[in-house]
Image 1: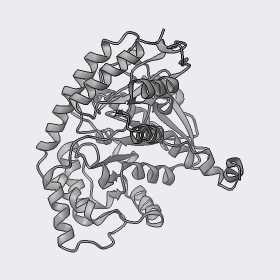
Image 2: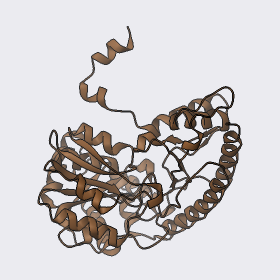
Image 3: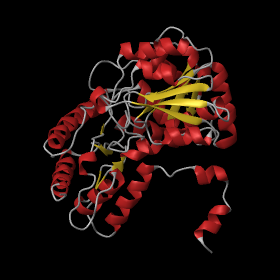
Length: 403
């Protein structure tokens, strides 16, 4: 049977959805690795650190204590309380447990919020470049993604006039991440205040603020847009444990939102996954209530790695990049290589270049098209200093072959 015939059996909804580019490139990297090729994987957004021991110990204790049953859809009470306390401690935000919905990763929290807010044809303004799943989740919800494109010269930040011009009577949601995946951009307090002032002037617009990289911040303190006047009732704050606590495999995210939206997400999640892992939730309590020094130590390591990669990227002819203020990615402009060849392969676009780097340098990156910026590629510096040095050296060698 032909694949096209099989595809026709599927829903229009799933056929319209793109595969996650980061997951897709990681698959290709694993395929090469299975052939015995030593591939440095810089395509995945995953800390290379182990989950801190006190968090593991809490999970082990939960298992030993028999805490292995279904949990409330929105999360166990002590985790929701720990999240409330964290938001007060770190973000000066006053919530109650009823405002919190715990999910199987921050991605589910984003999906929940969009599916509960967006009607068919509603417009969702997304600051671009953006995390690959944003536009696809908007599509899944029946909405239309409207991209606000920032330039490298302005640290990838669209200006406030661009936001004002993008708003229409169909605008329902504004989405962004800060610190940003893929650019490392961090919105300042004044920049967030400007966005907040625009939002409060429009009665039916809400914000999805993705703060998953909150702790991986190399500059001024993290600020949540929900902390500005009038914004807590208009904002869904998205966060989770994967990045700041090296807990990617635990699948634990959360949302803080107005009660009406939290209740809607509880209703939706109750029909999809119900409550997330009981063991992961107990680990999350330990993470939020426990010693944050391992998190701070990871951030120091990421800062050292950022500086290492920045220096090496600047040494590669034709590469242009900003200096990330947070997260653990570089998003360089590689368009100077388009049209070049090594005599075997012609580089037409960023996807071609990503594949060339994978096959020639044995380093996996991700094409910028997936993030809404076709002249760029994303590479993660969530790898050891040795792996990063090897990867950037190999990339430089491979790119110098293109004429």
